[in-house]
Image (cartoon, rainbow, N blue to C red):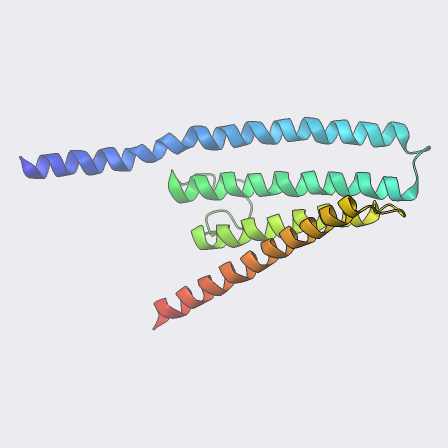
Length: 174
């Protein structure tokens, strides 16, 4: 009787991984919504390119690069997270299957996510630097300070994540 209860409990826990599938579907929908914003930005840039300054054009392009990075990050999280936590995606014979699919473990996913966050933060910081007003107020200075501080916190977090993974990897080998 106890063995039956144990097997039922373990089976229920194992099947509960499917509760994550709607989260990944929600992220797929969020990529579609992000595409709508991307198309909106592209249309705005297309219709205003002749009247915008070079700096404005660069900022618009950086905004689109930012969205592309976020979309790529979401896709990586969807693929890797689904394969790590829910089920393997069985498309091994598909010509367009990304090489990294099925090879990214949880540790690798964490590093890729923090790397993408650092890149996104760096792009936002670059956009801020390109928009620094010539008559900066104290509030502008404080805002810039916090953006740099937050970016450096992301960079430091990334370095610490990588260091912890290296230490954990070295520990497993010994």
